[in-house]
Image (cartoon, rainbow, N blue to C red):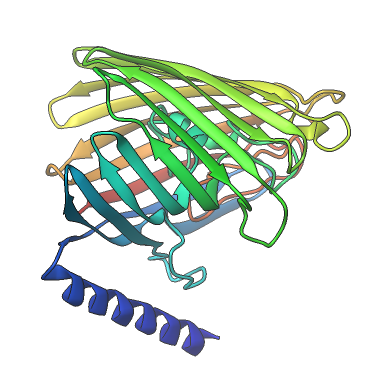
Length: 342
């Protein structure tokens, strides 16, 4: 198995290198990515666990070609790299697409985060860490059901930025890429200035499980201090998805002084409709130290307070390692991390 994965990686990298060389003469091609590793120590009151985690570390290629008349062909191929030596070697596990862009906006087809997911990601200062708010936001009590979707088979249109107002809409014919009739729609609209951002997002999973979701959120910049939040309503079907029928919210603040940034977040999810004791809350706090424009180190603490029938886990989304407790356990953990973007 390991030998097969190594051959798959070698073939993928060879193909990517061939693309880079052949396309470089005719179009702009960039190598880009990020490295995000952490050491985590988690205690849920029953047992402790320590692990090295690779958290949405990415290696990618992207480029464009001028087609004239203010139009460009755009493309991206990207892979989540498991730098802790775990996981599979499947290529294009991150946003990978091709399309056209111009003054009218951008239209792409391929694999991409939905506009609904992207709306929360921009208001989630602990993304891909042990304290990621997606532990509660966008999720139901049943594992595998969620609204934090990187959709397969997607067509997406992004409007031009119209004096701070911008929108996105996406449609997928089979969002999990498993040959099922699982169409989803997703959209967001945001208004952004130098001082604040406000917007909303909507996603429809009627063909999947009869559910739909709405998010409202924004942030305010006050010099060195920033505050933001998201409120989320998921309307689950009484028969097909009652475990998704609940509200959740997340509120955070950040303060920057010199090379240091202090961050804190609190998030809460209700018990889903028809149940009791399935809610939970998350709080996390940490400090980031910038070593350069592209490199940071951080230390944070995150904790979940699960209701008696809830099993919400730290690091459930975007974080390479996640720590699933027993029902009613309350995991808490320390994470020391290194982040570099290139």
